[in-house]
Image (cartoon, rainbow, N blue to C red; front, side, top):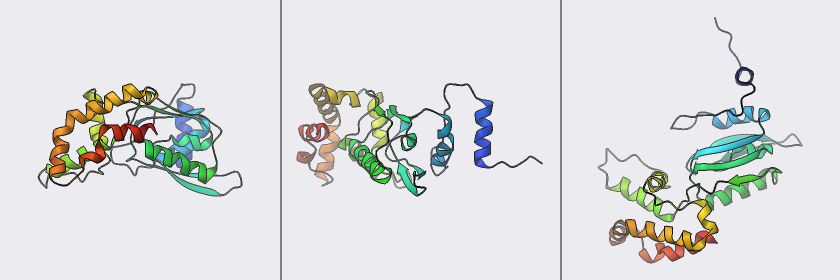
Length: 222
């Protein structure tokens, strides 16, 4: 009979087996609730940096962080790598789908819960940016499917964001540094899907004046 190991002992064995390698990749399945945050918490003491490589704000990793005074705080991470709470250099990578408002709120919640980490938090210039249009498109697409084909989407626009990257219609985080270029990307995205937005407006699903490209650009640049 094989000896049963605790989660910590199992991770230590994995680390010993692969000791000396420059990095370790943690992969979860597609449906969540698989304990990614717990595994990351056990791994963090062995590493100097933590990188989020993919995913969006619709996913979460729950961590219980032990503070210097011994108290515990439970934090749900969506976009920020969990290692930031352990004062590890943290990176939001190329394929993380960034929803700016959620990112800012998340950072504020982490700082409020445990104080400002000493480690830097980097964001890749290549990370795709969320636009209000993405959520509208996802809800519209899910709504026009026949009932047994609708998947009950979160409506956060993750799939249209990925599609926008493949269609070369994705504004990226780095474009925020160049407002004129960023505006061109937003206008191009809006023009590409304007027939759908007009149809949505006809059904009272959206008001075109409220999703005008200039308003979207102004809000995101702010």
